[in-house]
Length: 140
Image (cartoon, rainbow, N blue to C red; front, side, top):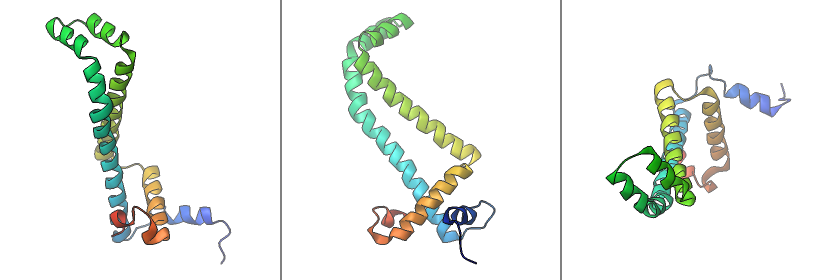
């Protein structure tokens, strides 16, 4: 029987109740792990660049806060230096978001939608072959 809609057939192939072969599951795990390492690499680079700059620019308000901590000192230290404050918030926000995302995946498992997306990406990597930049990290 010919396939009428390839999108529907690929969605049926990726249904969660169908048992995947262990090699494909291993490749999905490799892609997930690569995604996880990539997120943490971005966070480390953010902290080494934007975070270091922000902390350096906020060194005077930080020294005042160390002497006499008040929330008003924190507030005015961040209000009067908005660019370092935004940089610091970016670094903290990205790290907090990644921690929540990783904790959710550890506690409740990877959501079905994300599993299907990863499976589709692995299928695309396999289809493109060794010319894909992630081929050696995911398939081999």
